[in-house]
Image (cartoon, rainbow, N blue to C red; front, side):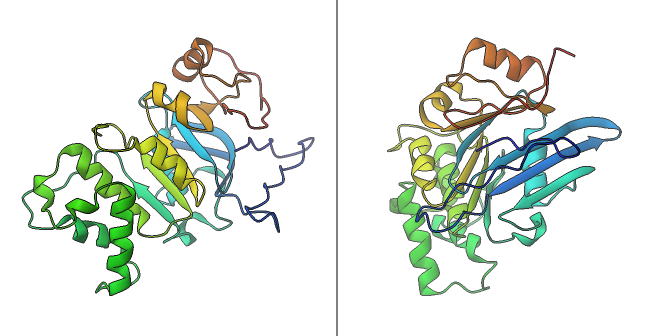
Length: 275
């Protein structure tokens, strides 16, 4: 993960993407944002956001409610168009990356009385490929349920799941698409961590195959597991510290921010203050 430099006269060179796992050729970044701004009814929500997310980054997105985190995810997904700036997802326009991006939205509601099994919910993630699932789709769905430690619930109606169990099923549904970028908007809010491995460990494992971006307020877990943290409150803002300190958190929740990188090369994009 790295910050992109400002564009225009006098701007520095664009960072070269890191090599892929084989080292044979540069990997295409999962996300490139250059000078992205977005307003709602004239009120700025995102201001001049520049950020590059590598093909195997494991990034947490911090910030206060209303700071623009979900809006930023929607722009990456192509659900919203920025007022200014450039967005590339896996080297494409956001709307052209369909099927390559898995998404678990915040607070997704299910009719738990609807008679559908866990396996069928996960298979919904393959509907973009074909209307009727084939044997290999079922095999893939069961494999992803196993990854989130829910394969023993495949035949169970979703109405019999706890909130944490359902959340793991929704993560499996996103993974069965075989994405190259996984976006999760507060996926740990209702999770029961007594279920097997921590999902943070699962996300870290997934980052060997894809870029993983997690919106979360679970600061304790973030400091233990992720490899990068981006703090967003309308703007992004770089902090040189590797650990989450009180200064970093005050910046994230009390003033505009650009990027906080953990153990990755980074640079301050511009001066910032309390205003």
